Length: 435
Image (tube, rainbow, N blue to C red; front, top):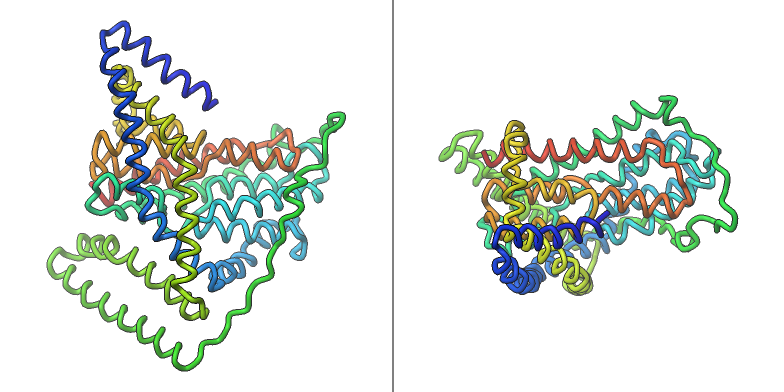
C-alpha cells in the first residue's frame, strides 16, 4: 500500500505540475526538501539522545517490572482463556509494559513471542482466537504514558516555543483509541461473520514464529530497599518538588484563573516532573544514573540514523505534491467536510498515512510542521495525531504473520475504528487545550 502511495505522490505531482505549469517549482522542491530532511534529523538527535538516556535509567532501575506487575492482574481479567502461568501471559505483560514506556523496539519481540504462544492455545489454527484479536487491538492502539520523544524532538527542531505541549493531548487521544478498540472487540466477537473457523494448513508452511521462540521473558527484578541516606535524599527531593509545585500553582491560578492557570501548570510541570521522577527512580534503584543514561543515549543515535532514509523519501514526495498544487486542490475539495468536524483538511494526509506507515506519517508530520509552523493549530493537531495510535497495518501484518494466522477475524475492524476514535480524541483534545 505504501509503495503505491509513494509512487502516486511523485507521479501525480509531475503530471499535475506539467498540466499547470509548475514543473520548476516541483524541481526546486526536490532539492530543498531533501536538504531539509537531513537538517531535521540533526535537530532531532539531541532530545532523542537525552530522553532515551533518561528512560534507560528508569528501565535499569526495574521500573518496567513494577509496571508489569501492575498490569498482570488486569491482563488476567481481560484474557481469562489464557492460563496465568502460561508463557503467553508473561510475554503479553512484558510487551504492554514496554509499550507503556514507549519502548517500541523492546516491545516487538515480546509481542511476537505472545502471538506464537497464543497460537499454541488456539483451537482453530489459521484463524485468530479471541485472545489474539484482543491482544492485537490493544497493541495496535497501546497507551504510552511517557512523552512521544520523536514528535517532541521534531517540534523542538522546528522552533516550537513549547515542544511538550502535545503530551497530554496525545495521552488523551491514545486512551480513546485503546478503549474504543477494546470495546469494538467485545461488540463484534460473537457476530456470525467473525466466528473463528479452522483453516487448512498450506503445504510446506513452517511452524509459526521460529525467531520469537528464542525470546526469553525476564523474571521481575526485586526492588532493592534504599538505605537511610538514599531514602532521605529521595524523599527530600520529592518534598521539595511538591512544595515548588504548590507555590507555582498558587501563582498561576492567581494570575490566570483556575482553568487557564491549571492548564498552564500541567503544560509547564508535567515533563520536568516526569524527568525528575525517572531519575529519582534510578537513584532509588541504586542505578549509576550517568553511566546508564549514556548507554541509553547511544540508542538514540541509532534510532536517528535509521529514520533518515524514510524521512528523505517521504518528505521529498510530499514536498513535490505540495509544490505541484495537487495538495491544495485536495484540501479545497475536502475542507468543507472535515472542517465541519473541527478537523482542518491540511492534517488529512497525516491521518490517512498514520495507520499505514509510522516512518511515513512521521515524515509527513515534519513537512506539515515546516509548512504551517509547529505551534499553529494544524501543527499541534498533526503532532498529536502521530502519537494517537500505532501503525495498524504493520502491527497486524507482523504479528499475524508470526503466528501464521490468515484470518484475523475482526482485528482489523477493531484497530481501524480505534484509530478513528484516536483521531477524534486528538481533535477534541487540541481544541480543548489550544483553542
